[in-house]
Image (tube, rainbow, N blue to C red):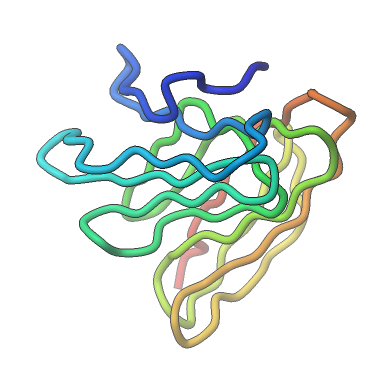
Amino acid sequence: MAAVKELLRAENDGTLSFGDYTLGSKTKKENYEFEGDIYKVKTFSEITKLEKNGLFVYESVPGSAVENFRETDREVSFAVSAKGDVQFTLELEPESEYEVFIDDVSAGKMNTNLSGKLSVSVELAEDAGAQVKVVKCEE
């Protein structure tokens, strides 16, 4: 997987791809319209952050490239790549339980905090990627 050189792009399948962890300095792309929402990405080697309509969606440390990001009421899925291990945080429903899958293997169930944030660490080989799926558990 490679960095997203245009920083933020819509894919033909209705998903978003964003982030370039190869950049040496912080770069951003703002006011990107996709399906009626306005997106903003900030990215470079140390961090990648995505906002939708001014609200937090995704952040990784260090920076990452995310491809085919899809978000529904019950699930978030995407492919992530970076120079090595990466920790990402997603904004989900507050105080809810989610099951996290990395490359179709369950990494366990996790709970979001009061603000709805869920943080996950993924071990990656250099410039390798992983498929991530976060599914809301039934109540």
